[in-house]
Length: 278
Image (cartoon, rainbow, N blue to C red; front, side, top):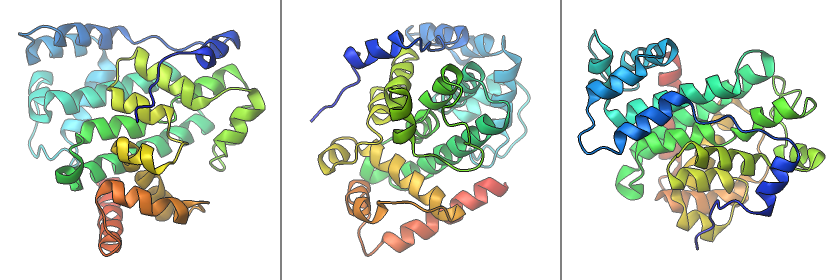
């Protein structure tokens, strides 16, 4: 099965409602153009990133973070990119560009980004732990976690009443969508396509409210996202309806057996807490 993210009538309806997607930032377009060349170098990428002080600062911050395990002083942007690796660095750059493009200041949006960053972190940790089973790059998993609800802040800008109490509690997004007659997952998937994110990430964003055994088997990145979301809820003690019904299929897709389930949960929560306090 291959549910895709091809634009259709639903996408046309989004534009009819006056929903505007932020264009791919110029720096990402320039980097994508560089990557199309066979002889692209870190020096060239550093020259492009270095035009944006905010993105440069994010790369340096990540290079000194224990999450990436660099463990040494970084003195130049090119060195930071080299030590991080190009793909992990691109994940950081795209995440920072997303926050800049859709906004992030103020109560509700700060709460949104805190949750997105937590889930992205957990997605990366799960992908690393289950790498032999899943074969999903940690950076790709991180992007799925960071972007999975990116349609929400876009709709918040268009519809002032949408998710207005986000800083107090995470809402039922399907109810919020129904109230304005649209779909945050479709908006997010279209943004991901426009920004040229990996196809698995685009599909995960589009279908992250469609929990079916065949979809989870076909798209293990979705299982990573669902597990990460559950683990965050578990960590903070948030209620979560329906997880008991969903859990067996998610764990099976991740390659976690009922016998190793508690070990998996404990290890992921411990690593999550360690990275939060680092």
